[in-house]
Length: 370
Ligand code: SAH
Ligand code: SF4
Image 1 (cartoon, rainbow, N blue to C red):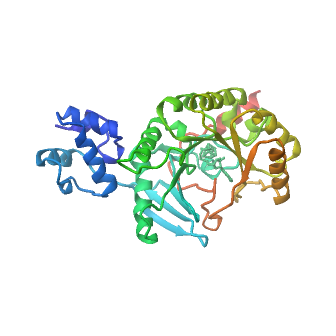
Image 2 (cartoon, helix red, strand yellow):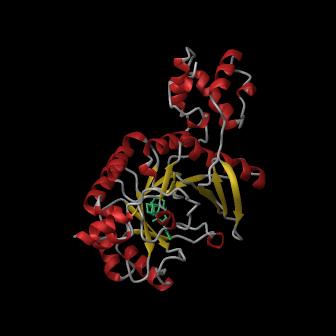
């Protein structure tokens, strides 16, 4: 019997949440606790063969072995920066690759993971956006990044839990790969798997508002919103998806999230010289966020050689941050890490050979015809 066609149509064990595995066990006439045993073997013991799961009945082990694999992405390259930031380039058999970055700090270790190969949303300052879109990653390919990074780092650092935080800030727009990302979050938070805190797994989105509204019911991840401007005229120019989901809609979706979860939203704001870094831009941002449960993270723009954009000066970033703080809006400036290995925010382009859709040409044509 080919069990894989009964459920996810994907035979890789890392695709399965606890609920998914319990459902599978009931289809096999087994008790739900078998799912829990399997998860412990897979994630706590890092076992990669059903044969080794000695507390599972032999017949069940055999059925599972005939129908599921432990396939993980393969590592194509590893680069370690002089500040300890590590970047891996992963692939799964073809020439398209995706990237994962680990950022060690004294009190935490953050893994920045990809949800897609490339991205269709073509933000004007982003290397991933320039690469175009190839493919959504499966839950197993998303989880595989954490699984492999954890095992490499645990050996290298001698720490049992080298990864304390996971952020969906690598390649791709996570809310355009919603179900696979929500399932991956469920595995990251599950005590039987990675057991991370719900405050330490963050989905970052450019503002896919229908999916943001669904987040409340379907996942417990923290939310970061890539805002980059407090006015539609500027935001639509640098984050083209704003033409589809403008600020009025975006802020309603943000309010729905904060009211339902009582949680704070982090607003990311990339500092672009002469574009969004002046006093009037800070004022627009204050107007937008003043009465909201918000924290702003200013990101110095990491240069992409092909682009004619510049990062704001340190002084402009400081003034901008001061303006927010004076208006009671929490604000931090992100430290740039890993730019020497091209692993800083927005510098992840992987290798997208079979690029498909990007909304950029579509928007360009629309702008011209207006
Ligand atoms: N697609 C999602 C998550 C991936 S991008 C999103 O846009 O939120 C992760 C973060 O990196 C976003 O806040 C994005 O705006 C930022 N970013 C992209 N390019 C950048 C660059 N060149 N310099 C600094 N930050 C950048
Ligand atoms: Fe896509 Fe995010 Fe880059 Fe925009 S910033 S192109 S949404 S990955």
